[in-house]
Length: 274
Ligand SMILES: Cc1cc2nc3c(=O)[nH]c(=O)nc-3n(C[C@H](O)[C@H](O)[C@H](O)COP(=O)(O)OP(=O)(O)OC[C@H]3O[C@@H](n4cnc5c(N)ncnc54)[C@H](O)[C@@H]3O)c2cc1C
Image 1 (tube, rainbow, N blue to C red):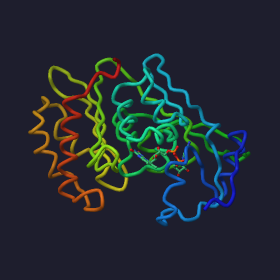
Image 2: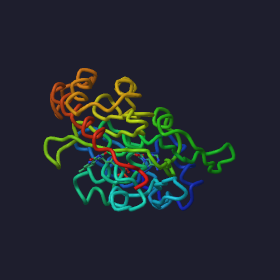
Image 3: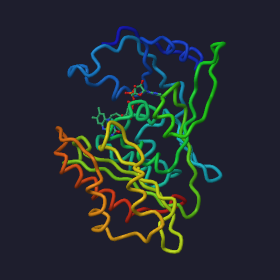
Image 4: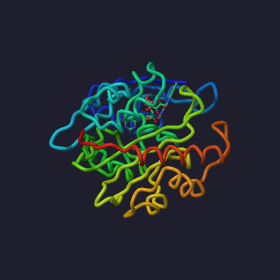
């Protein structure tokens, strides 16, 4: 239940309201306002609507892509400024009504196990611009690697940025039993090919832990080597994926689907500059 709704006009006001432990930021509300009936978030207390305070701009300038925290999944999916891998990750949220409300900032804040945008942004080595409250009550902007921000969340996310240099290839993927079902696994990859060898490989996956994160053991399998066939990737990856059995599927099923979407992503990665 929401006991109080605030709509601050400035970032300073928003951060001041959020300094109270009983307050929580509200963006599109597609995660925060869902689940009350299941007892997941029974009492929200005071919500602080930040929807109009964070930019929704999506742009690419001088080889840097930047996505405002207020950008919806649909805006990200539609943006010609973004690499295919990021647009597809946004589009993998099956329901258009939800894509029209769900935001990037909310996806990072919720940090769900099967988050759609987190894996591909981690693979692209994205950084986060976020605002925190200084001692004098003013908003101060900071920047951190996305991976570090996710592990020690603070402040309000303002935007995410990543480089799109020539030669970098990237892909994203999602597994679910039906298109509209909850995801079983999500993946994001990025790498360069140098003389036929995979270099600077980054793999992030969702569904194999409480949060979607980089998978260094999987990266080490393929770094510096020629990309194996999809069947070889699946065979090597499947035993290394740790999963629990739950309503999304058995642990074996998740490992299988995870290995398949990772093999597809590695084989299907496309240039981020395109
Ligand atoms: C039908 C349905 C389908 C869904 N499918 C998917 C899916 O395919 N993939 C997926 O990843 N998710 C899915 N979700 C979950 C949800 O839509 C996403 O996590 C979404 O990105 C949340 O964004 P939001 O703007 O609605 O955030 P909210 O629900 O408003 O907030 C989510 C969390 O983020 C915090 N937050 C919001 N903005 C910021 C900010 N700027 N800085 C820091 N923290 C912030 C909030 O305090 C809250 O903790 C689905 C939800 C529904 C209802």
